[in-house]
Length: 56
Image (cartoon, rainbow, N blue to C red; front, side, top):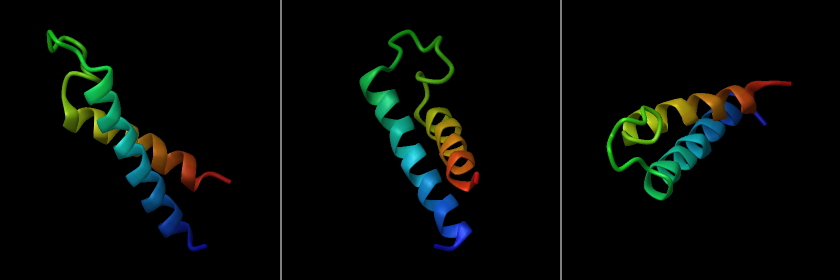
């Protein structure tokens, strides 16, 4: 499988996990930076998924 495809799939799965963390765990007060904002959660988890998928 092409490495770019692996990274793209890893980023998409990570972003999905980030959104699930926002919806399921969340933060009612908004003080939690990773789970209080869906865009930040998706970006951070997407990067983690991309890095994990791209490693050997």
